[in-house]
Amino acid sequence: MQVFGKRMRKYLDFQGAKLVPFGTPKPLHGVNPRSMISYQDWNKLRTDTYKKYNYKCAICGDSGLNQGFSHPVEAHEVWDYDFDTCTQYFEGLVALCPICHKVIHWDQNKMAYRSGSLDFDEYQRQEELKKKKIIEVNGEMVGLVTKRNHPWHDAKWKSDFSKMKELYPDIRLHLYFDTKWNGHYGRGDNDYIYKPIDNPYKKLF
Image (tube, rainbow, N blue to C red; front, top):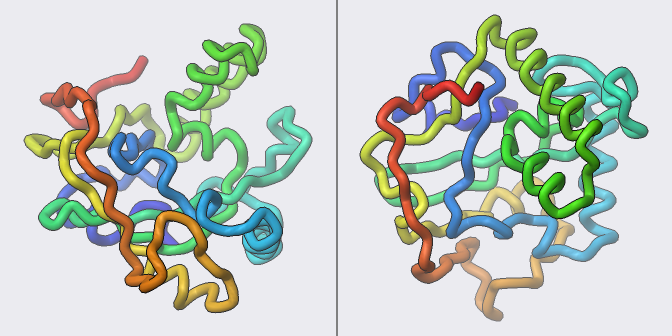
């Protein structure tokens, strides 16, 4: 399974990169299977995913145990994006090592440090590992990917979870949906400010 979907690749040139920081549209923050199913169901899905990938990262093949973490992999939700319809599609789960996972969710460490849940030394250590991992996987540093001339954070996005029912038919989605589940969740307009980036590969460091 690709970590970045086919629909996205119709619009974005990843330049062959397998590992890139990717900014989820802000109206879709918090819209994910973890918050829509019970802890027991999520725990089963993620542990099944770890076993499927033999506790190795789907991108680099590494383990978090080699990176100074107490766990080998983490579950990452694979999304695909249709920019014409502003639809986010859930495609399944993959196992990623903690560093590859942190590269994709680039600002996660910064927020953890600002909140006090990550001390400065560990923050610096992980930031250096992220930069090294990008070079290791891609051969060069790649900046944040976003689509040019698209209201990424201002658009009225919706999420399509129909594949969730296809892949995991025994899992019950119980949040955000009305009694007539239709596979979509739409969030209304929010007060987010969109700052366009002229170059989608603008250097981060």
